[in-house]
View (cartoon, rainbow, N blue to C red):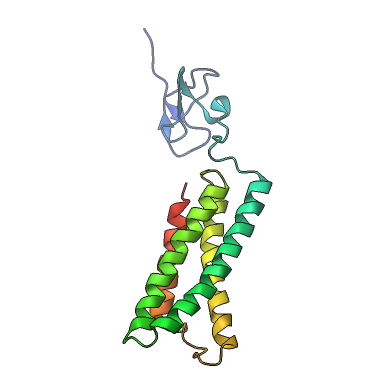
Amino acid sequence: MYQSESSFCPRDPQVLTNLRCGRCNSLICPSCLVQSPVGSRCPSCASIGMSPMQRTSGREILLAAVAGIVTAVVSGVALVGLLLMVDRIAYGSLIGQIVGFVAIGYVVGEVVRRIVGYKLDKRIQYGAGLCVFVSYVAATLMLWILPQLNPAAFANIIALAGLGVGIWVAMGRVRP
């Protein structure tokens, strides 16, 4: 008659288990268990590598960073030009700030996503969000250069909320 011996998982010493790896017969708990096509494996026997969709080379990251920064700077300057046009409309500047940064987030996210070939990598996701912040910095610098605009035009809660949503949109476009 078979007796079930329960013991503690070597990776999670507080978890009592009687599950065993199908290859090396070591104890594994449900949180350590890796289900493979040939049965349950411990993490070391499963030796799962990164998916090709998550492997991004240094060259691809560099290209995505350059493309994202260029897109962000051009978009930030274009946003200032747009705000110059809609400044005559009541609340046009505030609405333009929100819509502008959300649009910048979408465009930057899409450009970065296409440059890396739709790969899913956390570094790319954070880089896209950082690029949207670069557009905010570029737009703010343009406000300091142009004398007809208020240099503190983007120093309000509406602009910062738009920036936050824009970063969220960019990161969402390339999320893993």
